[in-house]
Length: 360
Image (cartoon, rainbow, N blue to C red; front, side, top):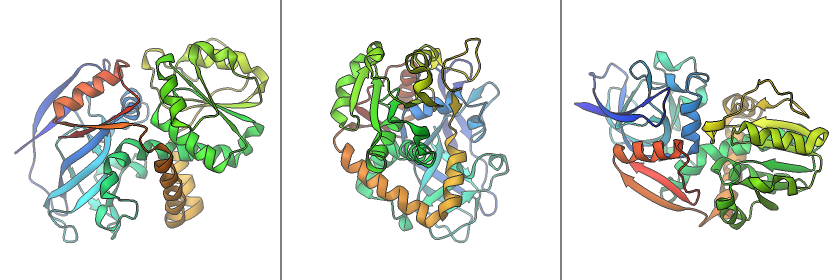
């Protein structure tokens, strides 16, 4: 029996191909998951761009020079050598862009388990955890697509707002968000509207996406990137999802000392991605990388898994209500479609009003 995987060339992310890989016999205590569905979003582009720097490429090994991009989705146990997990059970979690995944469950509970495969242990436990859907309070069979498309990105937005609120918003009156049409940005805007309504929310996006972002109703004002200089200069926090060095510099020059914090999250514009260094000294604060797994670990240590899960679930339900109808969900069969959608997103050809679910 073979698995099918999508291998992406690390130095040229639009170079992706399907490959058949033999499946080895399962060891004691292991599971074989048949991947049922996953979403392809800009978040996956970030995983690929930052694959080596943040070890995203280490979760699912591939031949030298290639990577398997991680996805969030659903899978079914199709073979089990674990006494407490039965064939047919469904799980949600971090999956490869592939047809199958073998895992070695540990810390098994009614609600989930962790993959204890040796190569995954150096990475954040956030990515190694799988939820057993039969006992998952967040699982709604009718909203599985939304969870795959928005869920991980929403959590990042939730954690950004939680961090900024914990810092008193660094004294800012205004939140300025780039790539405002991105799903993480929409999540951040939603949580900020719920938990920090006193902070004005400004969305920056491409001119073609202005209408979509305005229609979301999650921002107080929306501007095209070309119109950045029209934004009122108040004490502001910027959260940059675009990774565009030129745009980031324009934000710093516009706000100067009024910019109280500058966060870098994700890299949706990879052709002009920003770095923490560079030869130009930007006005205002030094941009600081926001690494969601570290903040997730701190959040759950502070609140515990039960209370932390309750807080996120409440914000998630509010976001689902606010974003209902914002996107059209397209379900595409086969890993060839996954490859094509991913390479199109890398090339910047993505419709923010469409959520893509792949069913391998």
